[in-house]
Amino acid sequence: MINVLVTAKDGQLGQCFQDIALNYPEINFFFKSSSELDITNKATVDSVFNSEVPFDYCINAAAYTAVDKAEDNIELADQVNHIGAQNLALACKKHQVILIHISTDFVFDGKSSKAYLESDITNPLGVYGKTKLKGEQAISKTLEQHFIIRTSWLYSEFGNNFLKTMLRLASERNEIGVVGDQIGSPTYAKDLAEAVLQIIEAKSSAYGIYHYSNDGEISWYDFAKEIFRLSGSSIKLNKIETTDYPTPAERPQFSVLNTTKISPLLAIKIPNWKASLAMAYSKLE
Image (cartoon, rainbow, N blue to C red; front, side, top):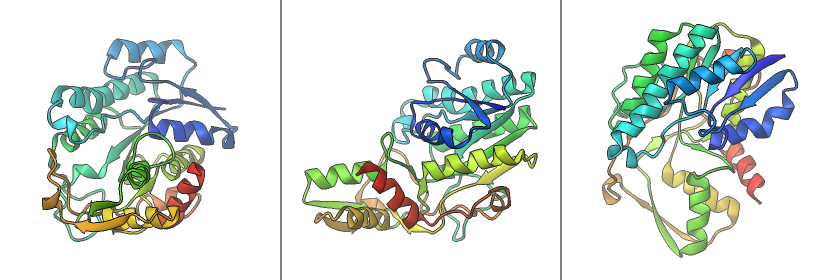
């Protein structure tokens, strides 16, 4: 059996891991909520690593992801995204555990015109991206045995996300405007969870930074349009510019991730975003 610790079990990604856990009988999961394992508290992290069975892997699904609120809650975002990641890396090093950490496309500034490679220069625009990058750097400096997986536009049938927000707005309004000049790749959180577990199953030692998102590049407007098509909504959808919808945090205009590097580690081909969205939507019905 492979013993795997998963942080933030109540979060969107954590719930996806729990949902597919039975498909991996060779993995013994230890799911911890943020209250059971506060990664910002080093003593608590050490206690969990000392008291449980010896872990083979730690999947860090914990993150402060409120992009706009992070602009005002800098210390909290840094504690979770940076210090928390560092605490886990230190514990993993001490106990010889492989850390799989989830990061974000927001480490890039969005000024590229082609999909970002793992080796491309990072330049986050806001507090969220900056604290996530600091977390990446802390892990890389502390622990050799790590996988950092950057992902983008995460959604699922769990938690709060773009898919569920659009469906809620469609039930409340007759018309909505969605940004059409920010380009990226949606990622079904369950696909990401499967990819992580495939890396564990393969017992890969190709440590480092990887990108994972569903296949295809679209705008938020395109994403919303497909959601409303699937749901049969009659809401009027208007394409707007980023300048029409100012937010406290600046978003990258283009944050498509190149997934060529991670593909050889995976047992299955990365699904297209439309197929995965249809799958996620079917889980909501």
